[in-house]
Image (cartoon, rainbow, N blue to C red; front, side):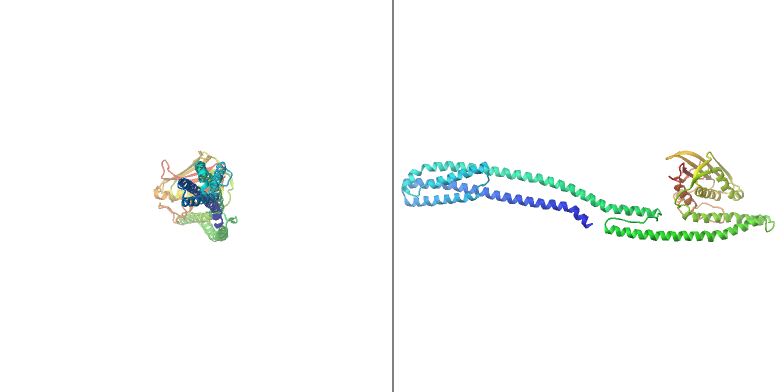
Length: 468
């Protein structure tokens, strides 16, 4: 993380460093040019003022022939020569046209000034040189001013060029920073996506694939923790399946003996039964069957629903319903229920074991929750769904309607509604949950819908291709 952050910040640091260095260099250059211009301008102005004063001293001497005036003249002439020497240190030394012209004008001023005599006898003859010096001094002032303007214009152009180059550099570095940011985000998000994928895999119950997370060391450690969690969950799942296998054996063995004894008594093996005794045997047979179905539901909830693949085959729907109804025939007759079942589809490709469990749960609920002399209506037909043709099967019954608050929870595992259920054995509350998950494994669904005349109606939807 620190390395990635430094990589992203590095171009910005380069941009800042380069900008500071460029601005500092430009500032030093501007300072040097400004000092040169100020010194040159000040010296030229001092020279011009001193030249006027020197001419005035010369003319005063010619008029008065005073030795003190001559001494002042000589001293001021030497001061002007010193000013010219100082100007030589700040005169432009590059080969620009204006700089060359300034140096030529300075050399002419220096030569002419050196022609002025220091003896009074030659002073009058040298007076015409002041006119030449004045012309050259004026020309020198104009050249200096032109040079100053050019240098200022050059500074402005250099500043504009630096600004453009900085903008280009900042733009390129911004693109580079964005590119590094994308790489850093990908570098961080890639293991995060791997972790999300592995968590979804664990949540779906798939413990077969080992978990390996690449990327930063922190993410790899987290991947190792997820791998430990996967192995631990796999161990717990194996222990649970082992427990269920033992549970199946321990529960089904005495129950089978109980059902066999009830069947032998019903067949009269122990002697002919009285009517009241026969009623007791019928109750034993019905409730032992119901108890077996509840045990199978508990086992199916953990084993059958989460099996890895569907074994699709064509199933005769009419025959399947007949087999299931036969197991509940005694309860149907005892309660005096009116049961109708008919459909327009003969065969459909389903996993018979799972599909049988779905229909068995729907029929069991209908039989147990339908009141005495009630009605159960079962119908199935083919219809167009979102993905093509699908089998639609409605299982409806009379009785108490399901409340609005219960509709949202009716398919939750172990939820038991408030409806009146017949029989001494209370349901486990997982039948509808198992049925819904079985249909979802087929790529379909199980929903609660409104029936035209009956109180409760469950609709089964199964695609033509099953679970693709």
